[in-house]
Length: 244
Image 1 (cartoon, rainbow, N blue to C red):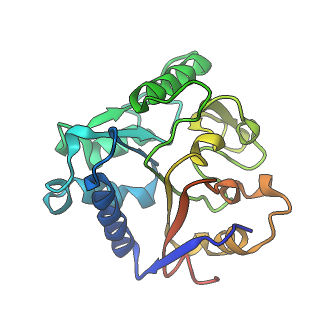
Image 2: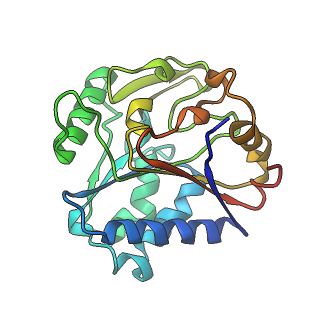
């Protein structure tokens, strides 16, 4: 069971996405001591959120030249592959925001460990992370699968136990696919984590993640996202929240 999570329920995906875009805009406008750094997830739910960020209503208020966007995770496919999270983000928002600093995971590289290390180094350099510390992103947007996974941290996979590196490869047997993902220490070092979850198909798993005892956390990876000195908020539509 997650400890005192903040839960916000919205009528539908559009209202949920607008609230998330408003929150992003507000966070990006606050004068940071360094660049404003956010990590975005792929998938169908975050797509509407990305589209809204590119619209003038929001985009004109965001100081894009000092915003750095990172990927939470990515499938090991070329960047123009229809399954690519980067391709979704590019089509949904990046093409409309030429000034944005977007840091793409190079998942097309055959050496996935080297690609992971390079991406971790890029995050550290951008954030000015001191040696021995975990990178601390200003906000990380996550989704949740109907199996309880978040990022590319799937139940029973090796990446769930990773505590040494910020980014690692992860093979997901049930999908027969390799991915790169931020690891739990990075998720839990963030200043803010915001889950975006929509759809009736997520309702039962969401109840388990938010209400069930964390007796077997490897079964519900999303339960493991509990920032030590940050906050976690769940943005849900009414369909996803129906069993809470």
